[in-house]
Image 1 (cartoon, one colour):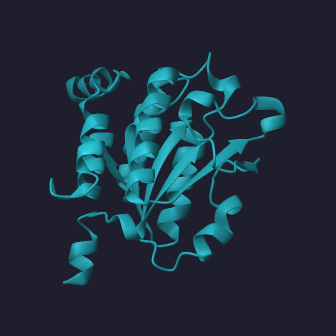
Image 2 (cartoon, helix red, strand yellow):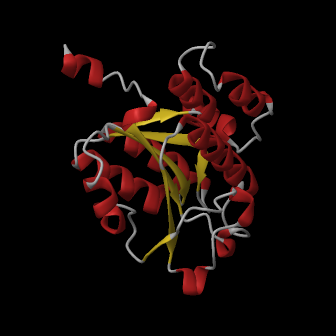
Length: 203
């Protein structure tokens, strides 16, 4: 029964972590829907802080690609610098220090590179991966769409930010629900997903 429940992809705050991947200045002009992706990732971070879900932040070669954008609201998080196209090698110690960890909520860029490789590495460790689809993007929307499909084929769960937030809260009687309700009442910015999936279905 335990294995069957695990395959459903349920998430709990005490066994989850939020990964924020490479939301840096130099990607701003080239990644599609960059402001919208950052806005949703910031929403996930606010909720994680309210629910006590730990969060980690990486920066890809920050000397060349710049710092994390301020609107993410990640002040207080220490960015982990990396050159690998996966977050996992740089975060091995963080992962090893959390034996209770079951689920990783994954936001950032680019979907077909660091997000996909991070997802595969996490799946290889036996962790559940929840890709926050409205908080991930790429320069190419073809790359974005195919990478999402590839991750789903490999066993990752694709979810929207609101779906994951409400899974974490679980109950309107939660003491933080009113604060979280204020966050999710703000409209989620359009990041082109509907067009992506409609195009997939019509082909």
